[in-house]
Length: 211
Image (cartoon, rainbow, N blue to C red):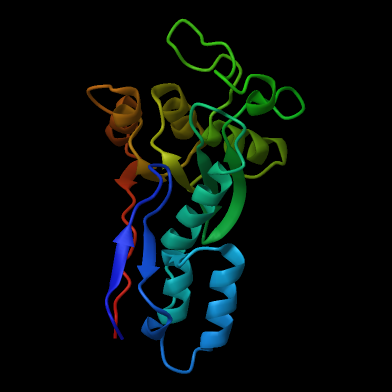
C-alpha cells in the first residue's frame, strides 16, 4: 500500500488524510464503491476518521473530537465556529455549538457581512459559546456533569472555564487554542482549570498506520 499524506484545509477542522490513488486502499475493499463515493463528493480525499475506521478501531477521543468538529459546522456565527461534546463513561451527555440562544438570531443570515454587534471586549454580544450551550442543555435536562469530560474545538475562555469547573467537569480536550485565535499571551481558561485540578490536554489526532 502506497504512502498516505496529511493535509490541513481548515484551521478549525481536524487534519485530513489524502489517498493519492484508489490502489492505496486495502486489497479487496471494493474499489468500485470507493470510486463512486469519490465521484459523488467531487473530491479525492476522505477524512482521517473514515480511513481510521477502515484500518483500525478508532479511540473514543477521536470519535468525540470528530463529532465536536462536525458540530462546529452547524454554527451560524460568521466570526468563528466552535463545537463541543460532553461525555461520561464513553457515553454522550450533551452537545453544543456557538451562537445566539435557540429561537433568537441566525447571524450568518441576518448580518452576513460582519455578524452580530460586538461588546466592549470585541466579542460577540449575542452568542453563547459551544461549551456553554452543551452545559446548559445538560442542566436543562437534569443530566449530572460531575466527573464528565468535555471535547471542544477551541479551548475555553476564562468565563467558560469557570462554568466548566463549577459544573464538575474533570477532563477537557481542545483542538485549537483560544489564546492563539484571540492573539493573547496565554490561555487563561486553560490555566485556570489546571490550577484547580481539571485535566486539560490539547487533542492530537491519532496517526493512521499503513500496514
